[in-house]
Length: 148
Image 1: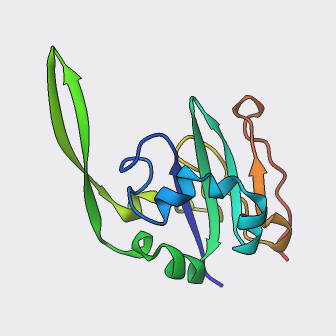
Image 2: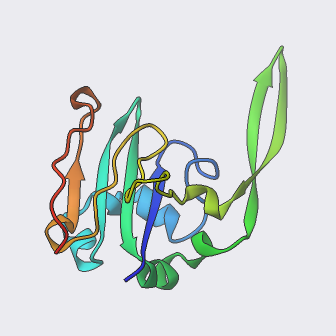
């Protein structure tokens, strides 16, 4: 089974998560923190605070990603607008983001990547399916189980 690792953050739509469905619902309704929903979808989610936001490191079977958020596997991108206030001037700036920017890949020699800010991903094993909360004060210390 091929496994996909992706990372989302609830801070800024467009930049930290795609501003489209299903991501809008996942973020606005905090789906990735709901144990029942995560277990029903057979996902492994590590989440925790990052400054004033919540960060999510998701480990999922490729088939699930293909069925639920296939854009992450595409070479496509999207534009989003940012309001910038600088030197007394208010501007609207268009930024570009590729869907694959949310994917995370292991570094050479590692089997499992880490997120942008060091938050871990957990291996995709049955005992890890569910929501795992981490605390930045705890250096993201999570026990790593053996594969099933």
